[in-house]
Image 1 (cartoon, helix red, strand yellow):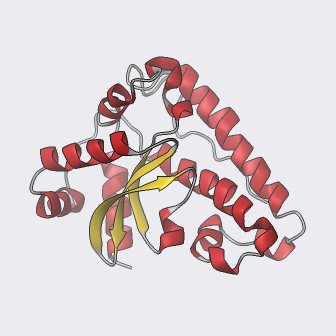
Image 2 (tube, rainbow, N blue to C red; image 1 turned 30 degrees about the horizontal axis):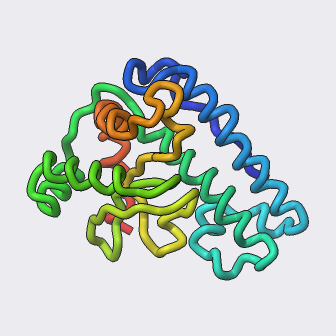
Length: 201
């Protein structure tokens, strides 16, 4: 059965950009609910309980129809958030292979940031904005709700949770300020590791 991974830092580690209360609720309530509901959906399928969540999402069409949407919603929620927590850290440097790849694809960091921000602001309702590898090429995509890029055959390098629960305590309806704050807490060391790992597969 799936378990809630611990946060790799304290709730207040991302202040002032992401507040401690949001992190506490986001991790301890929202993410925990996804884990609990994923486990509930898989209760009658012990063989699926042994699989990694990545496997379930990559092979979503083979999941029994009666639980498929629950796995998309709650398996996606579990995977997306597990990745998200590792992507957050203050004061890391934009460097390494991911720097070269982003500059090559988008022309510059500023161009990338502008495109990513535009995509995140343009996402209607709840969802995520991602930098993914699609057939070895970087691209920015949005997914609705807790849908995972893995189910589209794309590999997430990093992503931003743009559900209101990720920012409402501090930023209310000011999604633009939350997105701007996010760029101050991207763990580029982890992003670079994700990129190198996925690009060499």
